[in-house]
Amino acid sequence: MLLQRLILAGLALALLTAPAAAQMPAPSFPLQKEPKQLTPAERAKQKAIDDAYRAALPKIKEKQGPSDPWAGVRPDPAPPSRRSSN
Image (cartoon, rainbow, N blue to C red; front, top):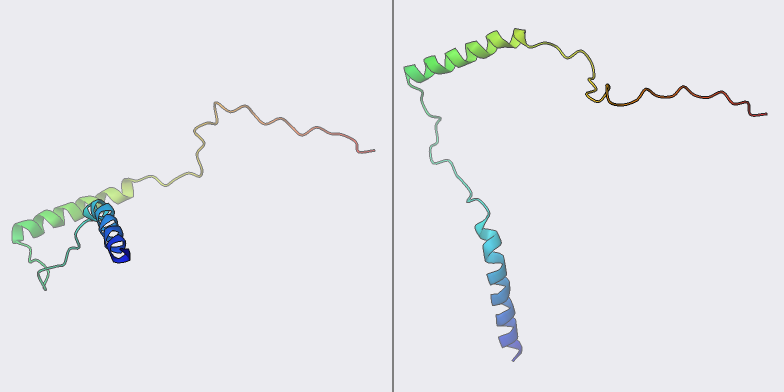
């Protein structure tokens, strides 16, 4: 009787965890030991992409400090009031 309940509990647990295990990606193992050799056309294309990237880097403007997109919407802070603590 106890063995039957234990088997049913194990079966129920296996059935409940099967959908979760099915959502996990299968582990991928590299089948090739050495890196892929590029053809001359692929090397030329990669070099053109790298050159375009390096040429575009100086055109990027440096950030001029923090920006506040809500500056025009938010009211100005009230000046602190001067109270005498006497």
